[in-house]
Length: 145
Length: 483
Image 1 (cartoon, rainbow over the protein chains, first blue to last red):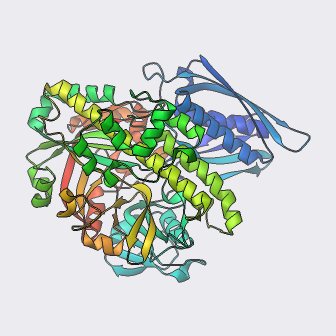
Image 2 (cartoon, rainbow over the protein chains, first blue to last red):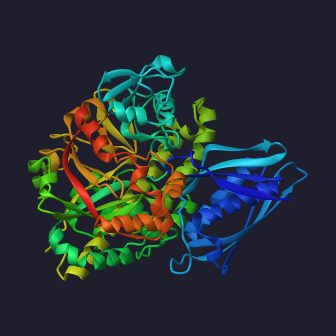
Image 3 (tube, one colour):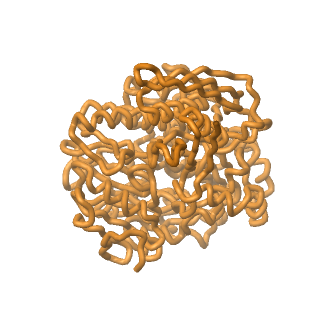
């Protein structure tokens, strides 16, 4: 099981875009989450002194991922933190909905110890699409910065 | 002429180009792009696609417009202007932008470059310390829910009451720094949580605080400049570019979701999900307008608190009060906003997204001090190339719903710019050219390199020749603070 992401050169002139890929839907969620975390700050320079649990459910995995990524942006501002890591656990419930249990780890913003990057203002629906290609899950995300 | 579109683009003049309604199914009005032939050729395909999508929105009047600094945006292009009938038209967060009331502010001084140069390093350090920037930055103003609601409803007026500025500042802010009709009950708790600690912060991306010089030979309209306190003689001025931060973004995100559902109810279909909208008179439309006005007022307050910090920084470094240094506000303009304005067609909801209001001389909507000259228009360039001060014209009021450009506009993505140059290189090169840059994110500096933007002088020339603004002065950077 694996996931990866890469930032896109020729999409979103004024902002940032990435593609994430995963063997499973959970892998895809983890890859997209890692891409957003890397956009905000180098996670290697961020400790894990702050944690937040997030629980969400949605029948549509694309909507669930969109809301989860938006949660990260929200907590970045509301708690004034950047993230070291995030663990995502995704389950498909008997009623057909997808359930997400996320654990965000990070610490308050500190420019003297952390390598800060872009202040993402939000996740957009521009070109946003989640699907399967050649047996792997993919998503394209454009971030407003 | 080779353009990045297959659509027919007709020449109206050397600076105005029109895409007729026959070029896309559903267009209700033609789309008009303001650009020189060279700028038009360099415009990305997104501009043509998006401005014609806007032309399909219900209740649109006259034209869907795009200014010469236009480029691809979310829903509307950046540089987009569209006006909708208040009774039959819509309101759309995509026509305002996520950063509600992102705008520009210019402060004059009596200082010259010769006065400032020996203290420039210390001044930049002081500004960098007092005006937080970058990821997760929080301001020095501590608010509770009740006081934040006062910021939402009173905007810059709240700041003046708290001592963050001078009463006369309000006359030099669009709408007096306070738009009526803001209703905090229409704002989500999430938006409040995101914004409550951010008053007085710059943010990141293309937002900045810049110390600039006005050389005498760069003042094109001495009479207008003089009326606004711009004297030339290597005069120091300070420019601020920022908006409503996470608060405004959350308001936009919240209402995009509301509007996606509302469109089904009202039977509205749009060409792009990011053009989600609702009838202006609907409950959803009015709720968004009230919430957007809260964010707009918060942005005015944000720039006012930053102005207070700038004055304090100058006073600390130069050992004189801000009043003694003549640190008066030249003007503050919004360039991401929707407002109800009166035109020959009647009352219209004018959306400006990356576009500045540009009222001409004699407009009754201007305070007396600007009525003779017309409204100041502040246009930010890249951190390397400088910025412009323009003035609104009667031409803009007749042709573009009193709207003009807002900046230079990007030509290269952030990811491409970062591959082309490193932040440290840019910082060093700028230092060699006499521009000191302080940045929270050095890697982010590369994204803002001058080569990633259009040549602002060409953009200004386009609006000048089109007659929708006139050039007053060019402003050259010597110090820049970025997130």
